[in-house]
Length: 114
Image (cartoon, rainbow, N blue to C red; front, side, top):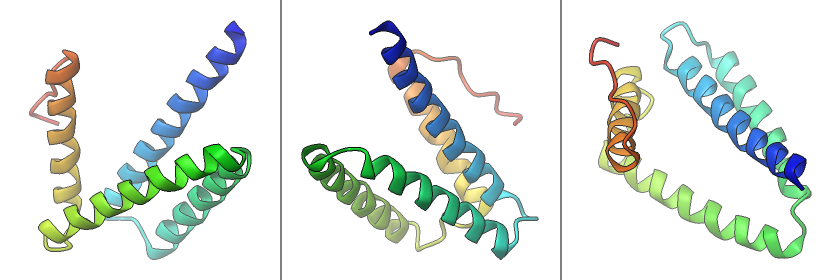
């Protein structure tokens, strides 16, 4: 049981870090359209594999949660004027989100010089 919990925690961490890596890569001014498509294809494939393993009941829960996340993202992009792909805007949103999380969870503050 302990090893199962460790594996679950590792999956959550690796998924989060992969998302952060992809977001950082997309925020780079050197990122090409091909790199964006490759990242999108990789993440879609990884998501499909994970979703296929959920089973019918958990898949319904996933679909519901995913729909909520997608609507929130669409609403947020609309509020930003669709400017979410501007690297400076992406970094500001990430920084602001981390600051909020650090206040809630009492994490170390972000260095303003980064």
